[in-house]
Length: 162
Image (cartoon, rainbow, N blue to C red; front, top):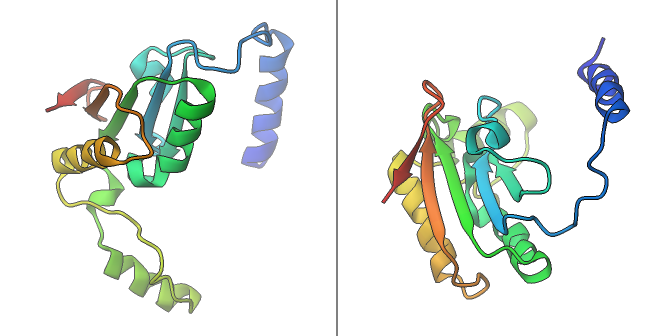
């Protein structure tokens, strides 16, 4: 069975008892969460979120610049008024450079990806602070509370970055 087929079976069970079809479009807690796409991070469970609570925007590394379009839409059209950034320990984004992945792409795919910023970082807390700073300095982002955390994949805890 493929993963997609497993998802279809799981969804049939989920939909059979689904009772949240009347949730409103804007997130009830008025928060946008930018988090890494790492499969070890279950954002909803780690942060105590339910369906309808928050916009959760995920990408490699939980990078704010990659999530900017979604943050703007979240704020301007759907009323979010707080942003939370979540990076995590043992992140793959700590393991490479833009140059290294571009070489790999040239070797494996025979393509040039020099126009893509892959946004790796060498220091975990500094990466969180850079993302907070980017959002605070962006003229396209409302001045709202922005908090950054590092999720510890080893313990499940979030640690505030200041």
